[in-house]
Amino acid sequence: MPVDTIFIEEFLCLLLVLIGWVTPVVVAAQDSTTIEVAQPAAKTTAIKWWEAGAVVGGGLLTMAVVDGPVQEWSSNPDHYHQATDDLANAFQLFGAPAVVYPVSGAIILVGLVAKKPGLFHSGLRIGASVLLAGVVTEGAKLTFGRVRPDDTNDVWDYQPFSGNGSLWSGHTALAFSFATSLSQEVHRTWVTVGLYAIATGTAWSRVYENEHWVSDVLIGAAMGITSAKLATGRWTIFGLRAPVPLATPNGLGVMWHGTF
Image (spheres, rainbow, N blue to C red):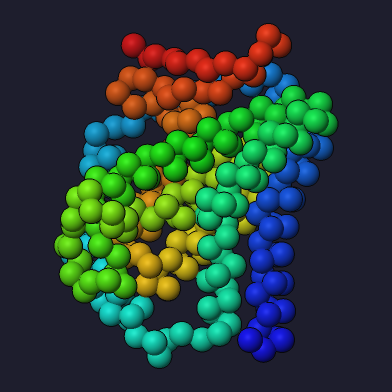
């Protein structure tokens, strides 16, 4: 591999790390307004049936209209270039389980070691968000068994419990869950814009490399955001708020809040 290509890839990876992880953590650690004791969100929004229906309908429409043509483009080797390949590889790091989970754990650890309760509690909420996104995603992959676009040209090729895991994109779900939960903790517009831009880049990279259909990343993004909102108590479903990690002076626990 040429030296300049290696430099580009390493530079992009470093830039994503600085923007996506280190900077927000530093901001959160220095923010004097950070909540010292984790509390459930004061305002909650119930997920409505038509909102869930819109996601499902939008996914089906994308499968019918967009997935095929984009897959045909992605499978054509002529559209690949070294620079965009490097960019896609860098973006994928933001949604890689081997990166997202350790980084979330590191935020918790830094908050604990540095005796910064606000950062520690933030890490708990971020960790719960990405964990929920990961668990739900793996369950969906197993259940639907959609075949990846690099293995089939059939948009409707589903083989439940076969080990195929195209629907939905795990990288995208983790990236958007991480971006959503972290932006909620930092409360800085520029950080929010940057995080969502990088998460969008992660989604693009999965389609660009023909690893996922467009509908996979769109649904993955929606599920990632939903996971973060549910795990941090900002959204409710079926009248229940998902478990919210709670660090109290007496120890670590989990509370379940109903809205009946």
